[in-house]
Image (cartoon, rainbow, N blue to C red; front, side, top):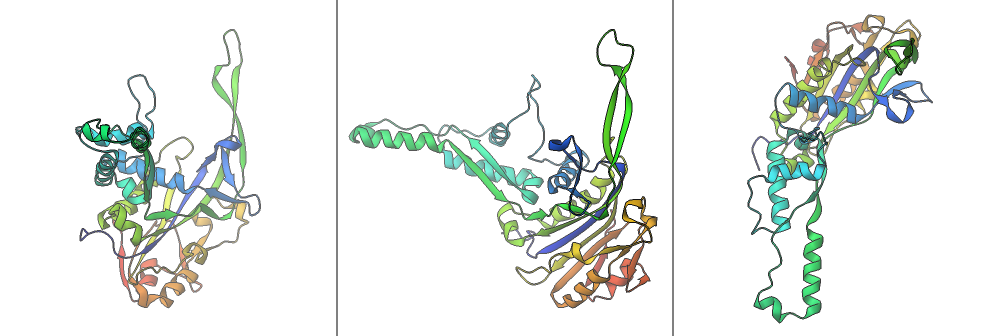
Length: 351
């Protein structure tokens, strides 16, 4: 085992906001922002956050990721089976079995692709390995045994490479009720030739949503994917800077506001539900919130929990946007001052 593979479990709590945008459209509902009908809170899938991380790692850090869109000269999008074959280029498969090729591909994918080391993957594969030999030994077999052997080999040319991701996030959820705003506008072009009127467009956005993501880094799965501490450092940077650099029309005004990672000493242990230990303090109705200056983030429950578990905590990393006001025990304070009172090693992230 490599010395830098992570050995300790940790929890991540990340907050970001969107202003007059759509943080995660639902393709089954006209791409509207996802909203829990019972609570009127905005939902964002973990897949959306992982996509943000992957795009940042690939586009800004120039690192290889497995799950990315690759097209051929005809513009056709590559399948996952063909993507797996990318990692067997240059490998002589004439004298290797399917299982040997599967092992080689697995090793190369883990060595090359940080997103698989972080989030795992289920990869269908189809390799053409060593063919069945029909020498004198085969002739000595009965026809039934030979047919069975060839059938087993044919089946073995297809399979799946599966890695359980050490880093997993719950579905993100806003810390307040949100308002859905329906907007109509005029398009730039006509719908067809000979028409004098331009087309109309409609979209649904959220005036404001402060979204909380909670995740766990599992040290047991990390042994399989060889997740390194350097990978986690890049993950934290990607969560923060990737969110800020996700510049599209619907996500132009997304900003990271709060990021904490708690690393534990004790194996197979984490406190759990860190996202349930924070809340907003505001004089406004939830749907009227438009900016971090409209509320304060109450971290009393979170910090008290960490103080209670301080003997199990190895270190804490954090980053807070200057526009976000932090309240602990009914007093506005710096998060660095509050966390320093826990007793564990505390580090402010500098990216």
